[in-house]
Length: 79
Image (cartoon, rainbow, N blue to C red; front, side):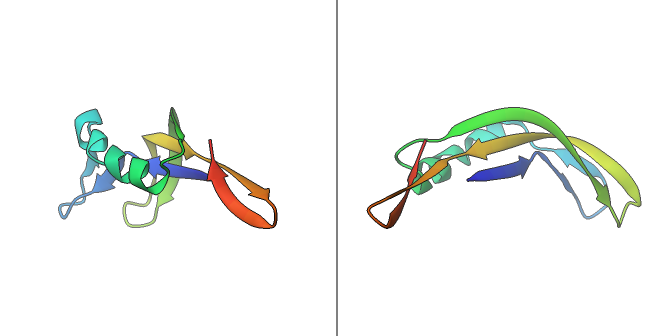
């Protein structure tokens, strides 16, 4: 299982705002609760085309990775 967690958002004035490492750290307890057996987070750079701004936005991102395995017909999440 892999999730891409963008590190920017567009505010009401149309400005692109960077999420700080401190702000992201407040999200970590939610990740731990969802995946108590473990996970890995990678720092990366990604991009997308913003149709509102009509331009490509390049941003810092976090990649959340959890390995999903199947044992005895039952799916479980593992790192």
